[in-house]
Amino acid sequence: MTEARAAVEAAFRAESGRTLAGLIRVLGDFELAEDAVQDAFVAALEHWPRDGVPDNPGAWITTTARRRAIDRLRRARVLADKQAILQAEADAEARVAAGGPTVDELEAQGVIPDDRLRLIFTCCHPALSPEARVALTLRTLGGLTTDEIARAFLVPEVTLAQRLVRAKRKIRDAGIPFRVPPDSLLPERLDSVLAVLYLVYNEGYLASGGDAALRLDLSAEAIRLARLLAELMPDEPEAIGLLALMLLHDARRAARIGPAGELVVLEEQDRSSWDGALIEEGTSLLDRAAAMRRPGPYQVQAAIAAVHDGATSAEGTDWQRIVTLYDLLRELSPTPVVELNRAAALAMAGGPEAGLTEIDRLVADGRLADYYLLHAARADLLRRAGQPEAAAIAYRQALAGTANRAEVAYLERRLAEVGGAPAGRA
Amino acid sequence: MQYLLLIYTPEIDPAAVPAEDQEAEMTAYRAFSAEAAERGFMRGGEALEPTATATTVRVRDGRTIVSDGPFAETKEALGGYYLLECPDLDTAIEMAAKIPGAARGSIEVRPIWALPMSMTPDAAAATAG
Image (cartoon, rainbow over the protein chains, first blue to last red):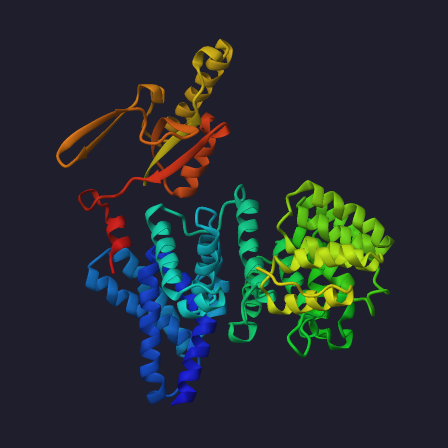
């Protein structure tokens, strides 16, 4: 009984995005498609414990969802052509279930199109708010529940549910097309897709303000979606670069948090606990992307992560190469955050004073005034340059800007080291 | 689908704009209208007199209250509109970006609400279930 339930849940995590994408293409309606997939889920919970888990659970779900969509259309007495398309696809799926070709083979033959790519682009359309893009992508492609997404982003479930409903209505009522954008729009739209996945990854990597243990692993979700995107767009170096970047960062995950939940910075991490398999996979993906000779910000960031991952110690890191890569990144995406990271690398390559000169320029610039990592980076450099009093002030400024427990623990330890008491914070 | 493209631009005193600039702007708008018509999108469009000529009307407790000026005083004011029939939002966005006013103001793209009476079979299918 529980085994069948686990099988149903596993199959839905793996298949619902594909099934949903196919139905949305034909129906042009997110809600109707979701209802049909939900029907199939309920049917599976009813049938599988009784009749056993089918040999090909994915095909069973797709077939059932298509049939339920036909039922719903019949009830609503609408367009025969949509029913016909669904019927033809359901028949093809039935052949799969009967031991014929697999869904992947049918997709490769063009009998059933893989609609997940269109779904990604629709969910990440720039006419939707960034929050809605993230929620919709996780809900429809990731197959996460509203409750799971709400908890992951620390918003009430009602708020998230409303966000999803509004986004789906906008897709329908504003006429957002369900398609992979034409070449003229592709670069800009792909940027939006990559940004959504990267945002999900970062939210998981640096679960700001929350208790990480209680939250869904958003980084793992982001990697799953990035894998899918890289698989669906094998000729897009930035899609591959983003996956490489995530894997190369994820390789250090275990080493990043200490036994008491405190943040362990790169230079103090136990490098033997880094995940060699992830580093290898990330590096080879990066090589594949780089061979396409179309550099982009994700590839460059992955290259920086690869330099760190390949070094046996902080001192043994090729900091000059990292500075060079930041120079390139600065050209591709000139943001103050990139400047800050470049300054930190410069300090490692040429001493804290070199980095401080750059950081003080950023402080004067003002765009990062409220960014706690600016103060944290400045504090670290002042400490290393032998200016404990100035460092303590900067650590306090950084502490005022973050609620993340692991980061607070790290900053307070450093503050104590430079002789400052952890003053009361707002 | 039909989209109303609302053109919001900073209001400038026409007297302060050189004649050749005004002429260039008119030429750009004529070119836009020509393209929209050629592609079969054009359903209408007008330019509006400045907000100094606007009158706002409200009815409260059965009383009609008339006041001078636009509904809201903002830096950018509604200066005109186009009504276009486009296949999807991406096309409407592409056209909006070509309106000359987009370069100095902003264009709000609003889908026309397909009322049940005017529903096409496609729209009916989309709202079923």
